[in-house]
Image 1 (cartoon, rainbow, N blue to C red):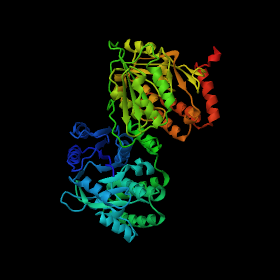
Image 2: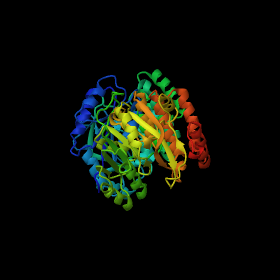
Image 3: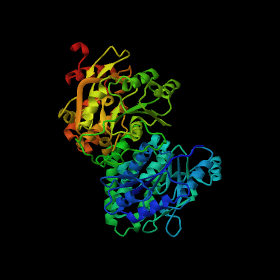
Image 4: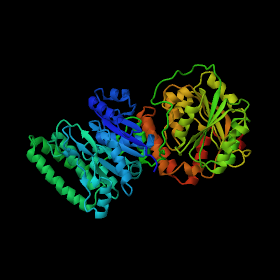
Length: 619
C-alpha cells in the first residue's frame, strides 16, 4: 500500500493563540503531516501573522472576508485537493489540539479496516479530558453485524455523520461529492457534508485518535445560541429539504429529534424573545431562499474562489505530487529595464497525448533550425508517456548540441503545473514557450529575444495554423500590438501562448500559472498586464500552430464553460475587468462554448478575420 499524502486544513478566525497551539500540535505528530493549509477568515487579530510566521510553514489562504466555517472548509478542502495533491485531508478548527498520535491512529484504523473508508473521526475531548458533547459522532443505524465486527477489528465504530473537529477525508470522495455548502456559514455544515459523503460509504469513529476541543466552556449543541439560532434553524431546513445527504427515513428521524432539541433550547433560554425572532427568520429564509452556489458566495474573497470553482467544475485535478511554485504569492517586479544577460531557456511540456513525430519536429524547430539557438531546453514530461514518445525523449540530446534537461513528473498534473515545475528548472531569466506539436520558424528567437533584452517583459507573435502538412498554411492569427494589448485583454487573450517569450521574474511576481482548462495562459497574462508588464506582439507569424481534428471540439462544452465563468469572475474580482465587461464576456463567450462544433469553427474564422486574421490566399 502506497503512503498517502495527508494535508491538514485548519480554519482560523480571531484566535491567534489557539491557532499557534493547533499548529504546534500538528508539527508534533508522530506521523508527519505532509502539508498544512491555514484558511484565515479575515481575522482582525494576529491570527494571519501567526500562520504566516509559524515554523511549520503552512500554505496560507487569506480570505478577504469572513466566510464562516463552511466557507473556510470549502476553500481549504479545494486547496488541499486541487492545489496540493492531497490523498487525504484532515480538517479541524483552530481550537482543535490534536494529541501526538491522533493522525497515526486514524491512519492505522484506515489501514486495518477490510474495505474502503471514506472518512474517519477522532474522539473529541474537552480540556478536562471528558468527551465533548458538541462533537459526538452518530453511530450508523441498522449496521450489519458483519460490518460492525469489521470496524471493531480496526478499533473503530461505523458512524453516519461527523464534525469538522478532526475529520480525515479521502480526496476521492471530495471529487465525487463536492465541497461543503458555503452558504451555511456556521452550524450544520459538517453534519450536512458528512452525511452527504457517508450516505452510501463507510465512515469510522476511531476512539484511539484523540483531539482536544478547547471551547470556552463544555456545552452541547442545545446550549442557548442567542441570535445565532437563525443559522441552526435555516440550515436544518435547508438540509432536510434540499440536501441529498439523508434518506427519507433519516429525514423523519433526524427531523423529529431536531424539533425536540429546539424546544429544549427554547425552554432553557434566558432570552426567549431573541431566540424566537432568530428562529422565525431562519425558518422563513430556509423555506424561501435556497443556498447559493459556492462560487457566488465566495465571489471576491480572493484566488481561493477560483480553486473552488475549478474543483466543483470537475476540472483536471492534480495527482498526489508536491509541486513547488515559482512564487507563493503576488509581488512586484521592475518592468522595462534592459537585460545585460541575453541567454534564454526554452520551456516545452510533453504529455501522454502528444505524438512522437510531432514532438521530434517541434524540438528540432526550437534548436537546430533556429538562427539564434537557445542556451538550454527544459522539457517537462507531464506524467507517464507512451513508448514512442519516451524513445524520443531519451535521444533529445543526440538531436542537438543545445543542453537539454527532462523534468519527469510521476503523475499527470496538467499544463499549468507542468509549466510551474519547468520554470523552477529553467536557469535563465528569459524563457521561451513552445509546445510539442507546434513548429517555431527559424527567425523566431532572433526576433523576440532582443525585444526582451531591450526592456519588454513579454513578447508574443502571430501564429499560422496548419493541419498535417506544414507547407500548407491556414488561418493566420494576428494578435494586438502596443497599447491595444491591454485593451484587448479585457475581452480575450491578447497573446498566442505557444509564441510567447517572457521574463521569468515577471511571471513569478504575479504568482505563476494556475490551473484552468485551456485558460491558464490568459489568467497569467492578464495578471502580468495588471502588474504593469511591458508587452509587445510581432505581427509576423513566428510559430506554425498545429490544428488537429479535435481542436474546435476542445474549445466547447460545459466543462470549458465552467472554466470560462471562473476566469471571468476572477478577473472581475481582481479588478481587471469591469462589471459590464464581465457580463459582455460571459454572454459572448458562453454562447461560443455551447454552440455546435461546425458553427464554432465558422464563427471562429469570421471573428479571426474581423480582428485582423487572414488566410495566405487573401494576400
